Image (spheres, rainbow, N blue to C red):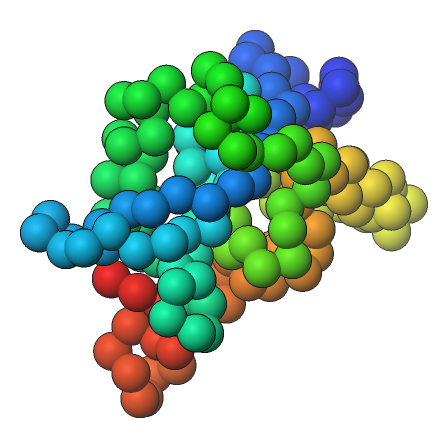
Length: 167
């Protein structure tokens, strides 16, 4: 196994470290909706929207993937990712505690590769594979708390979209 920077295997493509920025943006939740205030985290290196929540109506609510996609289109059509500070976004090294992260395809592939290493790890090298995983997550601005939020399942009963989701 070769470990180069933020790459844990002999894959040819390096998984770039993130360049996170966070800020606020007004965006409609539906095609003909009124724009609401969202808090947003973007990775300007990729560029992509990593997480967003509605914060306007009291309790913060995570937005679903269709809102994330339309939000990304809105932000990128105005080139916000080229000059995020001019739009009021500030740099951050880790995702804010509120963020429920999404992952790029290359990040998912790398996480799957590391998962394979964990499955095959022996008692002698499990600690080094766990350290590799932790370093990779830190390189993309994610903590164990964020991973828990990312994979947490919505309840089987109750609200259709879960308590913390806006669609």
